[in-house]
Amino acid sequence: MISAFSLIVLGIILDLKTPFIAPLIYILSYWRRDVFLISFIFFALFLGYEFSFENVYLLGVKDLSILIATLLLLEEGLEKRTGKIYYFLAFLAFFGLLLIEAVFLVTILTLMARFYQDRARKGLKALILPISLIFLFIVFASQIHVKSSLAQIIVISSVILLASALWFRRENFI
Amino acid sequence: MKSLRSITILIFLLCAEAYLLSNVFPAILALLIATYILYVLFEFDPKIEAKREVERTLYEGKKAEVKLIVKNLTKKSYRAKLFENPDFGKTDEFIIKPGENGFSYYIIPSKGFYRIKGSLEIWDLRKLFRKKFKIPEIEIEVIPSVESLKEKARIRANFLSKSTLGISMLDFHSLREFQWGDELRMIDWKASARLGELIVKEFLKEWEGDIYVVFDASREMRKKLDFSLSILSQLLISLKGKRVGLVLHDEIGIKKIVEPREPIYLLKEIRISPIKSDPSLKIPDLRISKYMRLFLRKIPSLSLSLIKMPRKSLLIFLSDLSNSDELMRVFIEVKKDCKVIVISPNPVLFYRGEMNKEIILRLYKEYLKRDGIIKKLNRIVPTIDIGPNDFKKVIL
Image (tube, rainbow over all chains, first blue to last red; front, top):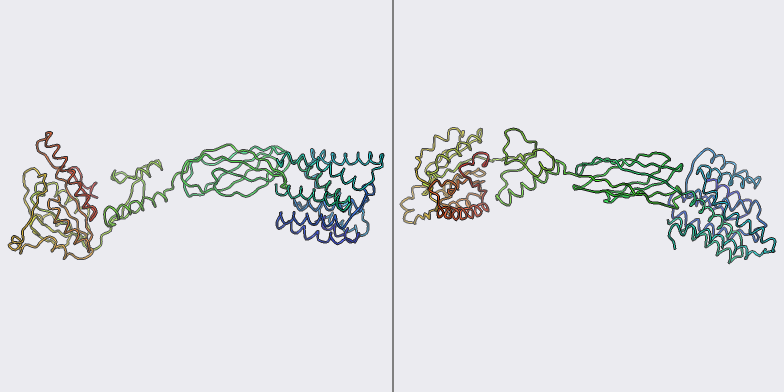
């Protein structure tokens, strides 16, 4: 719900069309899970086509907001949670129309609230691992002037492949 | 599992899109989603202990409650689904909270002995990862319910009465607990073994119309007159309250017909003298020639008289079947309109003469011959073969 409101606000601010279908995708998650996942796949691909940035070093608040809001849409579709805090944060999301940082704050706080309810322990280590790798790369790459977007994409994809090997092995995909 | 595959496909599609469009946004989105999956994976570490509580003995077709006790040794909640072998029906998915959780579900089992194996499939709340936990086996015994036994006994009794006895004279009524005074032959041993207590069958006896006792006063029967009269008197006592008539006949034809009245008055109508000699083992081949018939035409024949009996009457023949051929013809004729049952003292069992190897062999052969006649007659009318020790309990 919060993700749907945040994406609408971001769509208005950034003049994008794809975020406006977020509420429909969120409603589909109440109906059938497989339909929700398929629609989310298309949503993510369309958003990737419509919204772009070419350099990791140029990541700003609006880019992070849209990234986290999209992730939050997936999280809210997979597991429904209720609580007064979520209604309050959903209300706060509309303040993003005035200040885009509000959207970023709302989405981050929502994710943190959900991780807190999960009583996250080992999972936080998982969060740290890929982000640390990317951070190290950014620092290292800036020293050797690797600023090409393709190179960045390849590095990021490699990290994803390494990370995915962990759940591939567990679920016996290979 | 399906959700995880879909998300994995999305991640790689985003990477491909990022590469093709030279757009870093999809790649970073893919990285974030992959990180999220890793987070859920690392957080999913369930520790579950489960056991079932159910009564060891259940009844067939009756709903039985099974209690599943699940101990969640972590501080997280999980989704769970129970799988059992044999499968007694679907159970819904439920949430396991930290600590001890109790869930009840109902099964309707079929009869038999079961060793139930089970497992609990645990999912994280987002249903991305799962783990299976085994539940200890339990043994249950499902015994037939009284209702199902009654139904089976009813089907069995009616089948037997229709196929073997020819007509449904005795309809199965119910099963009940054994009471002092009940006949031992009425005990349903199968039902008793299953329920752990003595169970007897109760039958309905239906009589439509009048009852006639067709008493054979032929020479052979007069040799067993004391026994025959005992059987007759016990029959009449059992028929107290009903209207019973008497037809007295011998080898030639009808001697006397007594109209239906109170049974107690019928015994004095039988004025025949006994013959003091051992019953003959041979079934006499008594044929009355047509010339003899002319001479005896004033004496009404058995079949002609019985044909005139009121429809729907019950005819109880008390005869040792010494003139079985003629009796068979009579049975076939009267069976069309009346119900017939035959009680036949077996002459072999009444033999009281000298016993030696030759006689025993002869007795055995005659017994087998008679057994064949009884089986033949049973296809036409219900026939009960009795001996000197069989009284009311066998007949009734």
